[in-house]
Length: 163
Image (cartoon, rainbow, N blue to C red):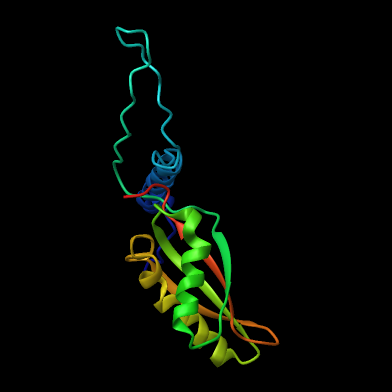
């Protein structure tokens, strides 16, 4: 009986497939995100010599999410839903008109269970405080160690453009 020998020709198909995969990944990574760059209006002169009003850019393709979160904090007693909701409205006022993709909330407390519960309570009130901003946003509850409770650090990751 004859022993099988290694034949490098057998690897040619795998090598070809791997090379195609690498080329596809390089091509996809080189394209960039067309929605991430803000459209800059180009003034065009009209018959009167004044710049013509620019149209808002149309968004095509999938939205992107900002890499850097907006960080806000609130202080309100656990269970005081009205105060939590008021504080959420106040700290997100300057971001009105934007839409959140996902939110990470860190409830501060010495007890991990109570901190996580506070973060959950804050996240449950996001859509009540700002329905347009937090509709369909993914939320995650976390605990952050602290001597006292009633404080939440919130990281909001917005889409790069509003719907």
